[in-house]
Image: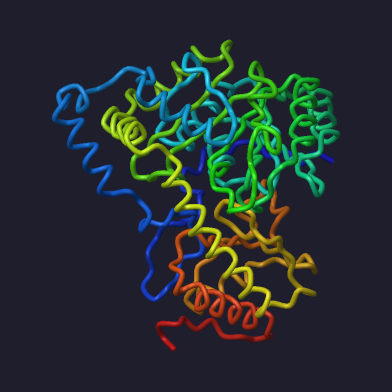
Amino acid sequence: MLTTTPPPTQPNHSALPRLFDTVADTINLAGGLPDPQLFPSSDLSDAMRSMLRLGGRTLLQYSTYRVPDALAAAIAGAMEFRGAQTDPAQLIPTGGSQNGLLTIALAFAGGGATVLCETPIYPGAAAAFRTAGLHTTAVESDGDGPSPESIRAAAADLRDQGRTPVLLYTNPTFHNPTGRSLSATRRGEIVEAAASAGLTVIEDDPYALLSFPGVTIDAATAPTLRSLAPERVIHLGTFSKILAPGLRCGWIESPAALADELRTVAEITTLSPAPLSQAAIGRYYAKHGWHDLVDAFRTAYARRAALMDTELSARLDRGEWQWQSPRGGFYIWLRRRDGQSTTPVVEQAAAQGVSVVGGTHFSLANEHADGIRLSFSHVPDGSVVDAVSRFAAGVTAADTPNTPQVSRAAS
């Protein structure tokens, strides 16, 4: 049976979990933040100073919704890094992937339009769809990701109900929150299912460059969905995870038939892209490329992920919890084998001084309440053991009847 969630009558614009808050004496495993120690701050500072000297009057002014040549080269370089090509004519600048998601949602909203979503789902995507007025429907997944049969069946059922399925949303590589990557075979099956159901695919792809050493993500093992069907797939990219999120710069690569409309909506939502950030990124790429920086991110995240995985294995009962060892990205997704809600664990972990995100935030209708997402990307190496120790204490407290809610600061 379909799980269809209508948009709220009055959209709740504060529905996202507060992932980036800083709380005293708390280790943040909630937010998907890059490691600031790896930001190339000095190189970016040099790039910005140079660009301001060369063209400050232009770069500090409003700009048009055209991707500058230097930024297009930086985008092409990032995509080539994972074995994909770009078409500069179909690139649309965004203020990061979130801005891109809202732009796409607004372009397709209206008339009972519905987006089919793999779940668990990135909360920002669900919020963008609902804020734009789209209905959302979960599609079933198996061990290899969204089921092609479920995509076809869900679209057919919606049409039988008089609804209008228009979009399929997926995060195919190092998925948020599960960390899963779709096989090459499943990617092809999903694109074919979307085509047969008349759906445009949103390929949200912020983590694809962050494969761990020894893990290959390329055109053979994990082709972009857009490379399989450029006329049907809208690809979302961002520099937030491979450079710095504070630059607020990303892109949409659109099918040719949708590019003008998406560009118009993007301009309406933000009026102007960020020309100084765009210029700095272009100059940084021209001077440094992506290899060294991305390799540094990959190495650091792989080290922390392995340490967190080891500590979880030592402290949690595998008979009660299940998870997959990460192969890239930012996250470990824990599930309770008994299906019970993890809300008490989240609360008790917070009392122990570690913040995590419960599975309800990744649900359309509370279907993943038994999950918890841990982010290893931002926690310093020296804090991983302490963070998992606190989390395990929270698990024990949540599973102990009549445990009082005592904050760490008050104990």
